[in-house]
Length: 339
Image 1 (tube, rainbow, N blue to C red):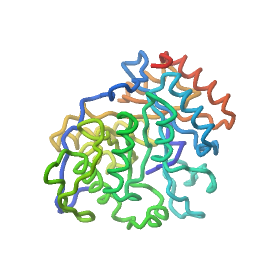
Image 2 (cartoon, one colour):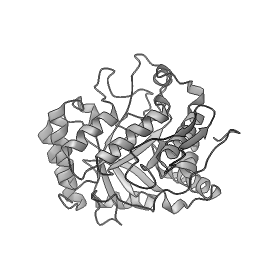
Image 3 (cartoon, one colour):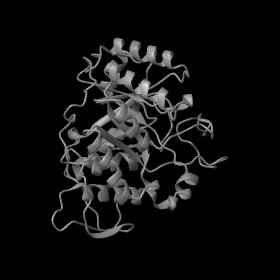
Image 4 (cartoon, helix red, strand yellow):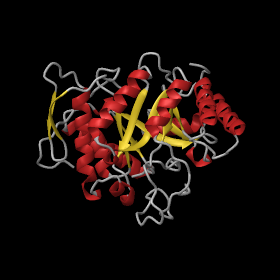
């Protein structure tokens, strides 16, 4: 499954103690004060990827102006990608390109997504902040729970997390995780996040899992929304679809289309029903391109099941060209500037 990969949008439980979390929020809830970024296509939401491929994602002036323009155009949110490290001459196969390799150069600046989103939160006022995707096995969930809750609280409830298991073995192992356990570890990490975000006072939260264990843990501040930060699952596998149905607030199928996409959504909905959850409460995020999306294409993605469309840019390094492309895109989609 991809993480920091801008080119994704042409388009299991074991016997340990586990928790299947109920739906944390109603379908398409938007936090107070956050923009909806919708057009006339059945309330479709539009997000924009951080243009990592430009090499400017760690340029503070460039990124601040870019994010402010995304906000001014009326898009719902901005989405940051993750690779903690890129290992030179990696043997893992990148699953979203026939070449098996990412287009991003090994030396391309890929800032930490949470630090970047914190910076962008301070540069904007209403723009939603999202990851796409955060590699959960790279993170200790107790520390991550605090980081996510803090960012959500300080941004006024603007954070949404799309998370996955990661595809680059070398990266995951460099972060200290056994690659073969990353699926189980991801499931458990989600449960830890939910446990620490819940109101467990005065006794604190208890957790006893395969990888993580604690008793009486108090983690404050809590996220703004009572259900915690929305957690979506990103990926292309059946396991990712099942994870979204069992534990997620949404699903971001990566690199899937046609029958493969329909099958993944069916798997997600089936898993949700089997877990006693409402499949209709789970958001679906699909992808397209800033320079190509229009009302007709958005209608087709809505018919495929999308509630949100994440848009990848052209890769232009010139900021004015990027802003012009965003403005033209917003006009085609009928977005209301500044809302």
